[in-house]
Image: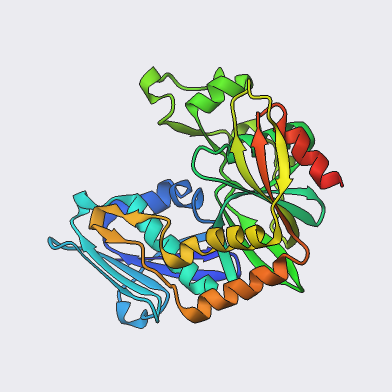
Length: 321
């Protein structure tokens, strides 16, 4: 059996105890398969025998002919068994995402599906939207053309500190669909591997090689001054705007987005036929609500719609006011 220790910097730590060789291989040889989704900063792997020591913040993933799953939410503990050939690595990623969420929310910290950018030394913005809304395309454009720095491109770790909505760190892989690259980023298109046209909007590729070290922000606390609900439209659309939501809509939008992980509504553990566990307690949700109230004293939430050519200009102007 191997013990795999995963750390989101100083903020949270989980242990995976497993005898599945495919999972061990993945962590050893393709760690980006998890770090592109969860902002894990350290992964260590070692031999381990005495699994009885772990009853908190741990996952047991063991080989067995019977597929089963059990969660102990109070102790943040999961027990999973499956055949080696039936294990889907994304399922483990989603379980880990849920369990990191459970640990972090008790510390008033939240994982949010978003792109996050530094635009001043101690200031950041969040780009939020459904899959395909254009978060990554807009973030890449702001990095390349306007000198913004990437904090996160998938999940951002957030908190409220000293009365300010604060970004702490995030995932660093910039992953784009082939179709987006072909339509909008010709400088990357020539480097795409060969592909079938039917995969144009299915396949993704990490494009970090087209960025430099200076394009990435270091891990530190930054005030989130603005949140943008993104809807990136086609290049022929002339209606480009950034509009600030009213206070109630700002509150509702942040609550909806920040509670997704807590409520377990973000993913399904499909290989086990199991929903994401919910950590929706009155205490957790009330704490989140109070944090959002504090955050909105110094943060604004906007709707942002437009083309990839025009919308970045509107967004930059909004931040200059």
